[in-house]
Length: 622
Image (tube, rainbow, N blue to C red; front, side, top):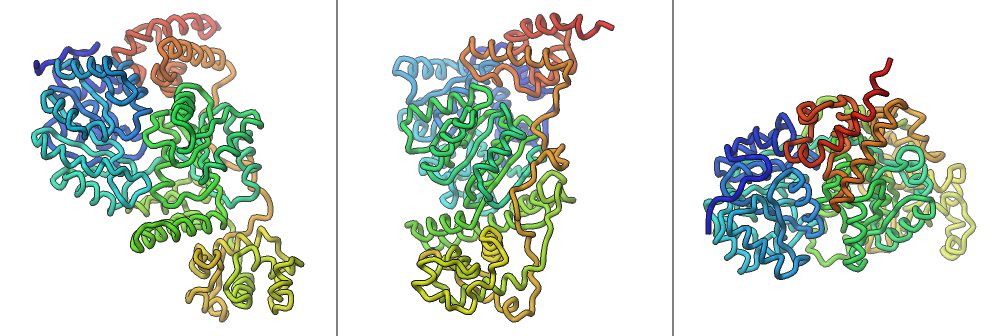
């Protein structure tokens, strides 16, 4: 066995992180904590890194792996995504590979041989593969530069992405005590951070907690009011031809929504754990490699997705926690370009999630924690102040001023004195025995003539018909806000009955004025009717630049198809935009474009320079 390994297309022999950043990855400067994290690992120390999606986590372990002698081992939970990550590294001139069950015996043997001969700089493994005794013995015979544990929140048994294999990764410290380790995640509150450090044996690791803020994402949250129409309006008005993810709570809703979107002319694909593995893999491949694909999915999809040009994430059901919401919305706008996170929610979501929690086999403590997280998520939906400030505050980060790029900042929510309406609803809940769900209580309030109302004699109730002046949608909005504020609760163990809480007494007595959001009387206004420039999907291409822009994208697509890789592996949209603006005329000017390193210049520079030359006369003629 030899400890040396051949240099990639760009020489990193000096082990200088700045040299690697510029010549391999094509960037001129580090962002945020990147340099400090990299220096920590290069020095041989451990690190725990919390950095938002799109913040540049991968460079934090890729550059130290290239700067230190040996091969960096990356533990990633999703086999299907390793290929694209490795292809992107290879395009940058890095000797990278993966070992997983998709490889045949001979191919796996070849990669193992390359590892032992020192010919690899980065090797991706799934945790279950790494933990096999044979793999650990293989690594013990190789020169390892570092271990990177990606998606480290999977170690948390409180989390929604828990993976049992992650609990055993503490063995790396015991088996390889001299090799630095870095655990990375985009989402973790204080409790999850402590759990990561404890379970991965990173007690002495240096912690790096970057800002959770993703200022390029515009947060919009609205009550459900014909959600299909709301989604269609959003897609037609703002997202034509853009890639995005639509999250649904159930598998059946995923499939029906994907079918419906296809009928509306969108390139939409379903994804959930109940689909055959080959179908999931094919849909994920198409989402990553084709442009303008909309993935309709359960939370089974998305972790580790490295597609930079996702322009929107839409939730048609309420996420069960702010952690889940933050992580899922963070899959939009990884390239730093403007993106939109749209959430549509309703009281039925609260009922469904509460019921799922109440009937789960988890401990009572776990159920209590999950209920608290759901309450926090509901609170984010119903606030009338800046959503980004509330979101960041949940992660113990304070924003100095309102963000100006969420729906409550762009259009200040109107409030109204809902004290009298709340008293009517609470009285109806009480007079019907606190045994019925929202739909029946609202029927009583509005004086509906239904069999159920007559069966229980509620047409003779003193609250029957006292709310006939308001629509069912308006009453549902009031009920939802009263549940969120804690004046009512949904008892999942009593057929989702609405019940009063102690907090409602001052309102019922007329001692407290209750201000709620103004009720939605119609569908939300079109986004084009208000100033949403900060969250526009992307800056418009001028009419005179459009032909060159289309040609650049077509060339990128052609080169990607030739190599069987996603277009963004060739160049990100941001790189093409800078190319469109700067119009480089030679290799030196091309190398100055962000995202173009030595290897990509060698592979793709000439075709793009030739294309730009074709457009040069039209650009310079007077």
